[in-house]
Length: 226
Image (cartoon, rainbow, N blue to C red; front, side, top):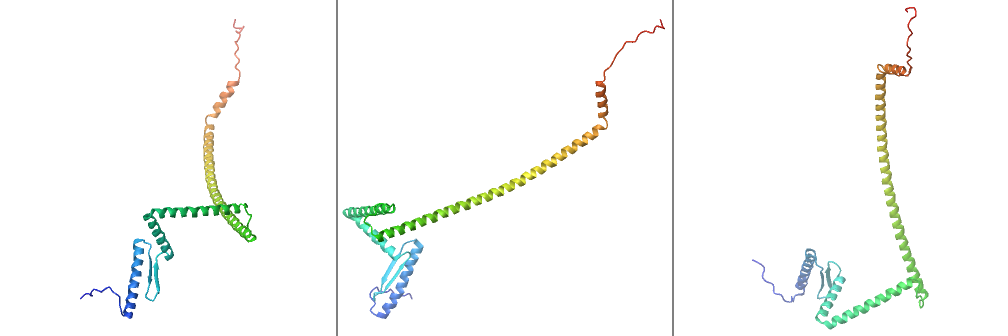
């Protein structure tokens, strides 16, 4: 048989009430945790026992949940009450104006302006603040310069590797050119040696004969024959 329906009312027995509270509290916290994980919800749970003992669960921060709750509750109340919304925005404007004035005053003091009215302690705090700011700026500058130097060194190393690779290719091309040059001249020498065995002698005689002058002379008739 199934378990009977439990009547929802206060448990008079203190021991049973404490046991039920412990079980239900654990189950409620478990359900809240599952809800936050499954639905990506921001959950804040606070439980006070009858002895004023606090039990709480929050998947982010209980303080952040409460602040968000109060903010949304105030905004909802302002939407339901337009005059309150106007007052709210007026307060926001006043707060922002005060923050802007404070920031402008701090900026002028950091620039060395309007230092009148400051005590020695205030001036010392301002000096410490400037030194910390300057130290941070210098560290950032050194970091940027270091990164740039490392990048330039890396690029220089790559260029050096490319130069070595190009030199290797150039040397290979030179070697190929030398081999081609040697093959071309060896073939030329062989052709010249083979041609001198048959042709050059005749060519030289023709050249010599072409330069020798030819003298023609008519012969006189023989007188004895007459």
